Image (cartoon, rainbow, N blue to C red; front, side, top):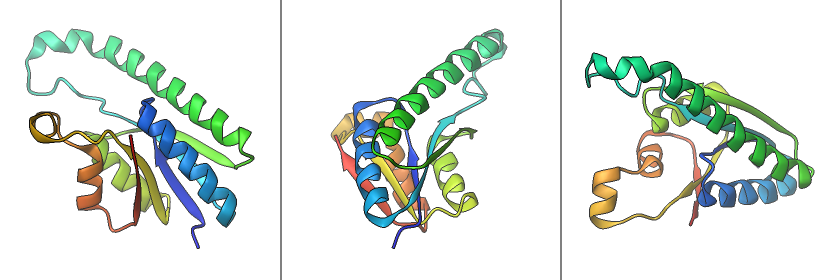
Length: 145
């Protein structure tokens, strides 16, 4: 039924839960899995030139964080006997990177975690999962943390 699962990770406990769910599905359906981490390459756009000096440091730290999250996800999937590909993707927003990756990689299911924030916290912080659900045409399995 599902031949290619896309699993966006961010290193959080909820993304680890999503990796676990993806492993179960991949084994059941014989699916291949692609794990991605989305980095915003220009997070300081529009806030002034003073922040531009920290751009290289930011990208270095973000890439290290991305590689660590992907390494951990790949380890969990490898332990489950699941074939996994991975990549770090650059996009202006995480949700946009996830939606575009799903289309580009011909995934047929996105498996992702949700922190389950509500109220003012959700309003202030936004919700990557909610944005993905609103903008993708692919089915999405949400693992709630």
